[in-house]
Image (cartoon, rainbow, N blue to C red; front, top):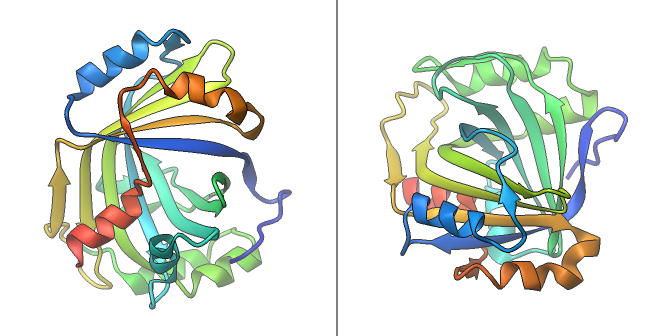
Length: 234
């Protein structure tokens, strides 16, 4: 695992992310529960589609570390918003790091690229090596392959003091990504599954149970990356 310089990366402080997997309610019902929460959540941003390309080693080390529940693990992804296919103008490279129960993130601007049937591993690697990414990041990415694409729709909520944030994700779609020629036809769609995440800083954990207790959801170790790999490959 690389250790990106904070001077080169946009960093997010380590925080808790409690995840809840919901199947009994629809998205509108989940939103209503959040809006009725006594902490008074509001929507700071409009909802939008989120798209990700996940990268992993040939031996799928990131997948297996997450499967084993390793204390220190990470995921590497390229994220953008809006349309899935076509010219991707402002993608972001993200290293999502997990240390025990808390997680952080290092982000870098990524070069624009096209996601279509011509998308392939070799061209993507050339794009990485010709980019303005820090040298250690570029060399780390040389050992990775794009293995999964996923897309979902997200609503955002936060308390007025910004101490607690909630996201609601649905329309989960996962695509297998091949080294050459990708028509994005081998996919798995899970229209019923909804993932709710409660996010807050480490120092707020002692009082977080009070906030979480109002949600009638089952907490889970849900990982979109893990789910996607298992649905389109295994």
